[in-house]
Length: 168
Image 1 (cartoon, rainbow, N blue to C red):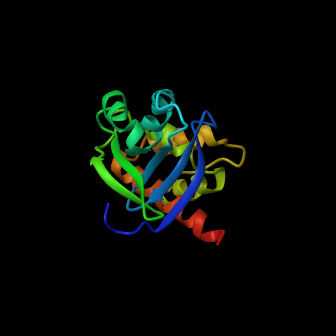
Image 2 (image 1 turned 90 degrees about the vertical axis):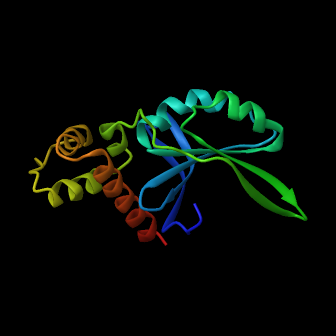
């Protein structure tokens, strides 16, 4: 993506903490970036893919020249791939494959990246009544039942951007 994100979130817990996204860039929609350096095992991205695919519509693996060919072979075809290399002391990123929407995106799983208060705000905007004792799971189910995938992804991104900007 050529334009700047409205927010960057490092180490965002997804799927109730089953995985931690290295960097999530908030554009119109959240874009997950998983980073694997020379010393990392590229295969680990495969085990994490199951979680990221459910929580994000766009995912990109950022890795080094050392892992580039293997990464392109083994990671899901809808994931993007960027190659990082150092040039005169500066890290330069080159796109090797563009990301496509995850066919496994799950609205409820994606909603669970939000805090309860954020979920309540989204529900309120949809005129969904939230019981005082409703938990995140209940609220997520209610929202997922009435929002489309793209609309929901945009709402999640807006809340994540507000969260990040609220802490600056």
